[in-house]
Image 1 (cartoon, rainbow, N blue to C red):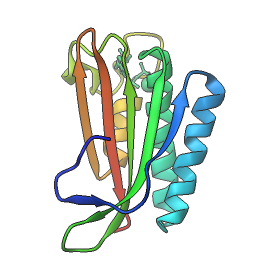
Image 2 (image 1 turned 90 degrees about the horizontal axis):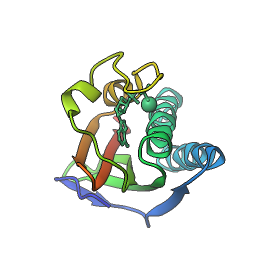
Image 3 (image 1 turned 135 degrees about the vertical axis):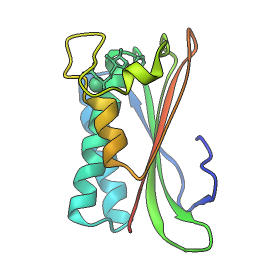
Length: 144
Ligand SMILES: Nc1ncnc2c1ncn2[C@@H]1O[C@H](COP(=O)(O)OP(=O)(O)O)[C@@H](O)[C@H]1O
Ligand SMILES: [Mg+2]
Protein backbone atom coordinates (compact mmCIF):
# COMPACT_ATOMS: atom_id res chain seq x y z
CA UNK A 1 0.00 0.00 0.00
CA UNK A 2 1.24 3.49 -0.87
CA UNK A 3 2.89 5.09 2.16
CA UNK A 4 1.47 8.45 3.18
CA UNK A 5 3.96 10.77 4.85
CA UNK A 6 3.33 11.30 8.56
CA UNK A 7 0.93 8.40 8.99
CA UNK A 8 1.27 4.99 10.62
CA UNK A 9 -0.74 1.84 9.93
CA UNK A 10 -3.00 0.85 12.83
CA UNK A 11 -4.59 -2.30 11.45
CA UNK A 12 -3.82 -5.09 9.03
CA UNK A 13 -4.50 -4.17 5.40
CA UNK A 14 -7.67 -5.68 3.99
CA UNK A 15 -7.93 -6.25 0.26
CA UNK A 16 -10.95 -6.45 -2.03
CA UNK A 17 -10.30 -7.55 -5.61
CA UNK A 18 -12.25 -5.48 -8.14
CA UNK A 19 -13.18 -7.56 -11.19
CA UNK A 20 -16.97 -7.30 -11.36
CA UNK A 21 -19.79 -4.89 -10.50
CA UNK A 22 -20.47 -7.02 -7.41
CA UNK A 23 -16.90 -6.41 -6.31
CA UNK A 24 -17.54 -2.66 -6.47
CA UNK A 25 -20.38 -3.24 -3.98
CA UNK A 26 -18.04 -5.31 -1.80
CA UNK A 27 -15.42 -2.55 -1.92
CA UNK A 28 -18.12 -0.13 -0.75
CA UNK A 29 -19.00 -2.48 2.09
CA UNK A 30 -15.37 -2.83 3.16
CA UNK A 31 -15.00 0.96 3.13
CA UNK A 32 -18.09 1.19 5.38
CA UNK A 33 -16.72 -1.48 7.74
CA UNK A 34 -13.40 0.35 8.08
CA UNK A 35 -15.21 3.67 8.60
CA UNK A 36 -17.27 2.17 11.45
CA UNK A 37 -14.20 0.53 13.02
CA UNK A 38 -12.39 3.86 12.87
CA UNK A 39 -15.45 5.58 14.37
CA UNK A 40 -15.89 8.10 11.60
CA UNK A 41 -19.06 10.14 12.04
CA UNK A 42 -22.04 9.16 9.90
CA UNK A 43 -21.41 12.09 7.58
CA UNK A 44 -17.74 11.19 7.18
CA UNK A 45 -18.65 7.51 6.66
CA UNK A 46 -20.94 8.52 3.82
CA UNK A 47 -18.27 10.68 2.22
CA UNK A 48 -15.76 7.83 2.39
CA UNK A 49 -18.18 5.27 0.98
CA UNK A 50 -19.21 7.62 -1.83
CA UNK A 51 -15.58 8.22 -2.81
CA UNK A 52 -14.81 4.48 -2.55
CA UNK A 53 -17.71 3.69 -4.83
CA UNK A 54 -16.56 6.14 -7.52
CA UNK A 55 -12.92 5.08 -7.35
CA UNK A 56 -13.72 1.36 -7.37
CA UNK A 57 -15.93 1.89 -10.41
CA UNK A 58 -13.09 3.68 -12.20
CA UNK A 59 -10.76 0.79 -11.33
CA UNK A 60 -13.24 -1.58 -12.95
CA UNK A 61 -14.33 0.49 -15.95
CA UNK A 62 -11.12 2.28 -16.94
CA UNK A 63 -8.45 0.20 -15.23
CA UNK A 64 -9.86 -3.11 -16.43
CA UNK A 65 -10.08 -4.31 -12.84
CA UNK A 66 -7.68 -4.28 -9.93
CA UNK A 67 -8.10 -4.07 -6.18
CA UNK A 68 -8.88 -1.91 -3.19
CA UNK A 69 -6.64 -2.05 -0.12
CA UNK A 70 -7.88 -0.47 3.08
CA UNK A 71 -6.68 0.03 6.62
CA UNK A 72 -6.92 2.28 9.64
CA UNK A 73 -4.03 4.72 10.04
CA UNK A 74 -2.93 7.18 12.70
CA UNK A 75 -1.51 10.61 12.11
CA UNK A 76 1.86 10.79 13.81
CA UNK A 77 2.09 12.91 16.96
CA UNK A 78 -1.61 13.88 16.97
CA UNK A 79 -2.93 10.34 17.39
CA UNK A 80 -5.84 11.20 15.09
CA UNK A 81 -7.14 8.11 13.31
CA UNK A 82 -8.41 7.77 9.80
CA UNK A 83 -9.24 5.30 7.05
CA UNK A 84 -6.85 4.89 4.15
CA UNK A 85 -8.04 3.36 0.89
CA UNK A 86 -5.89 2.62 -2.14
CA UNK A 87 -7.30 1.65 -5.55
CA UNK A 88 -4.81 -0.01 -7.85
CA UNK A 89 -5.03 -1.23 -11.41
CA UNK A 90 -2.63 -2.19 -14.16
CA UNK A 91 -4.69 -0.55 -16.88
CA UNK A 92 -3.75 2.04 -19.50
CA UNK A 93 -2.98 4.84 -17.03
CA UNK A 94 -4.16 8.45 -17.32
CA UNK A 95 -2.46 10.60 -19.97
CA UNK A 96 -3.68 13.98 -18.70
CA UNK A 97 -4.22 13.95 -14.96
CA UNK A 98 -5.27 17.59 -14.78
CA UNK A 99 -7.99 16.96 -17.33
CA UNK A 100 -9.13 13.75 -15.61
CA UNK A 101 -9.50 15.67 -12.34
CA UNK A 102 -11.62 18.39 -13.94
CA UNK A 103 -15.27 18.55 -12.86
CA UNK A 104 -17.47 17.14 -15.57
CA UNK A 105 -14.75 15.69 -17.80
CA UNK A 106 -15.14 12.08 -18.86
CA UNK A 107 -13.36 10.16 -21.60
CA UNK A 108 -16.47 8.01 -21.79
CA UNK A 109 -20.12 8.63 -21.12
CA UNK A 110 -19.76 9.24 -17.37
CA UNK A 111 -20.64 12.39 -15.44
CA UNK A 112 -16.96 13.13 -14.93
CA UNK A 113 -17.43 13.74 -11.22
CA UNK A 114 -15.80 10.61 -9.79
CA UNK A 115 -12.20 11.72 -9.39
CA UNK A 116 -12.96 15.37 -8.71
CA UNK A 117 -15.72 14.44 -6.27
CA UNK A 118 -13.52 11.94 -4.43
CA UNK A 119 -10.80 14.55 -4.14
CA UNK A 120 -13.25 17.03 -2.62
CA UNK A 121 -14.76 14.52 -0.21
CA UNK A 122 -11.45 13.21 1.17
CA UNK A 123 -8.83 14.85 3.40
CA UNK A 124 -5.94 13.33 1.47
CA UNK A 125 -5.98 12.47 -2.24
CA UNK A 126 -3.06 11.18 -4.24
CA UNK A 127 -3.13 9.98 -7.83
CA UNK A 128 -0.16 8.08 -9.20
CA UNK A 129 -0.34 6.94 -12.80
CA UNK A 130 1.90 5.88 -15.66
CA UNK A 131 0.91 5.30 -19.28
CA UNK A 132 0.70 1.62 -20.05
CA UNK A 133 1.46 0.68 -16.43
CA UNK A 134 -1.60 1.58 -14.42
CA UNK A 135 -3.05 3.85 -11.79
CA UNK A 136 -3.15 4.02 -8.01
CA UNK A 137 -5.42 6.45 -6.19
CA UNK A 138 -4.86 6.74 -2.43
CA UNK A 139 -7.28 8.59 -0.18
CA UNK A 140 -7.60 9.20 3.56
CA UNK A 141 -10.51 10.40 5.67
CA UNK A 142 -9.54 11.52 9.17
CA UNK A 143 -11.88 11.35 12.14
CA UNK A 144 -11.33 15.08 12.67
N1 LIG B 1 -8.22 3.98 -13.07
C1 LIG B 1 -8.26 4.69 -14.19
N2 LIG B 1 -7.53 4.30 -15.27
C2 LIG B 1 -7.55 5.04 -16.42
N3 LIG B 1 -8.27 6.16 -16.57
C3 LIG B 1 -9.02 6.58 -15.55
C4 LIG B 1 -9.06 5.88 -14.30
N4 LIG B 1 -9.86 6.56 -13.46
C5 LIG B 1 -10.32 7.61 -14.14
N5 LIG B 1 -9.81 7.64 -15.39
C6 LIG B 1 -10.06 8.67 -16.43
O1 LIG B 1 -10.47 9.85 -15.79
C7 LIG B 1 -11.73 10.28 -16.32
C8 LIG B 1 -12.54 10.96 -15.23
O2 LIG B 1 -12.94 10.01 -14.24
P1 LIG B 1 -14.23 10.32 -13.38
O3 LIG B 1 -14.06 11.68 -12.78
O4 LIG B 1 -14.46 9.19 -12.44
O5 LIG B 1 -15.37 10.41 -14.47
P2 LIG B 1 -16.21 9.28 -15.24
O6 LIG B 1 -15.99 7.96 -14.52
O7 LIG B 1 -17.61 9.75 -15.15
O8 LIG B 1 -15.68 9.26 -16.64
C9 LIG B 1 -12.36 9.02 -16.87
O9 LIG B 1 -13.32 9.32 -17.88
C10 LIG B 1 -11.15 8.28 -17.41
O10 LIG B 1 -10.78 8.75 -18.67
MG1 LIG C 1 -15.77 7.59 -12.59
